[in-house]
Image 1 (cartoon, rainbow, N blue to C red):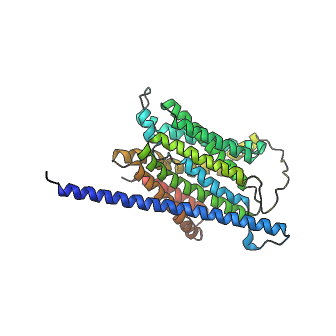
Image 2: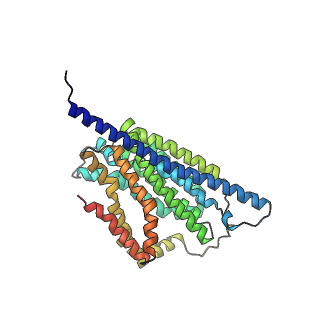
Image 3: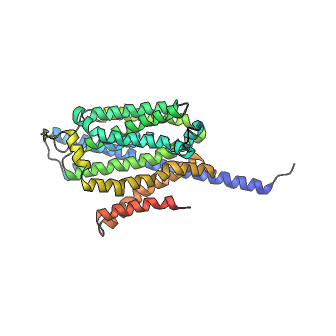
Length: 362
C-alpha cells in the first residue's frame, strides 16, 4: 500500500504548528501566573515587614508602603479567571440547547445568555452600593462569591435553554456583587496615591484573569466538553473564596477608617441625583453603552464566526489571551503617551471608537 507523501507532509506540518501553538500558549499562561504569584509573594513580604515595623514602633519608610487593599489583586485574578473560563463557548453551548421559540430568530436566542448575564451584572452593580452601606463590603463580597459559584454549578448541570439562562443570570448577579464590593473595599483606603494604585492592580488582575480564563476554558472545552469547564471554574472560585477568608481576616490600611457621618440624603435620592446628572447621562449614552455593544463582538459574534470557519475553542481562547496581552502591556503605554498630549475625555472617545473598528472588519 503506497503512502500519499503530500498528505503526510501536510498532516505533519499541521501537527507541528499545533504543538508550537500549544507550547507558546502554555508559556504565556505560565508567565501570567508567575507574575501574579511573584506579586503575591512580594505583598506577603511587605505585610510582614510593616507588621514588624509597627510592633517595634519604628517609622515607615516610603518604600515600606503597604495596604491590604492591594491584596484584592490576587483574589480578583482567581475570581475573574473562573468567571471567564466559559466566555469562548457560551453562544455555542446555547446552540446545543436551541429549539425554535415563537418568532424569535436563532441569533437572538444564542445571544440571550450573555445578555442576561450582563443585565444582572449591571443590576447587581447598581444595587451593591446600598447593600454595602447596610451590610458592609465583606458580607456583599462573600455573597457575590457564593452566588457566582452557584451560577457556575447550575451552568454545568444545565440541560436546556431555560435552565442555562437562569444559571448565567445567577452568575452575572454574583459577579456584579463581587465587582462592586471589591471597589468599595479598595475605596476604604484614604491616601489617593495608594488607592489609585490598588485600583490599577485590581483592573490589571481582572484583565489578566479574563485572558487566562478564556484560553484555559477553551482548551478544556475541546478536551473534556463544555460542562467540565464550569466545574473546574467552580473549583477555582472556591480557592478564591478561601483566599479571601484568609487574607481579609483583619484589614491593614495606610490610614485607619474614620467614623462615617451620614449626610441625611437617602439612597434613592442619591441614585436619582446621580443618574440625572447630564455628564453621567452623556457618559452612558455616548461612551459606555456604545463601547459595551461593540465589545460584545468578542463574547458573542466571534465564537460563532470562528466555529463556522472551523476554528476550535482553543484557538478562540488564544485570541482572547492575545487581546489581554495588548490591554495589559500596550494599554498603559499608549494611555501614558496620549494623556500627555490630549485630554482624558478625548482619549476615552478615541478608545471607544477603536473598539468599534473590529466589528466592521471582514
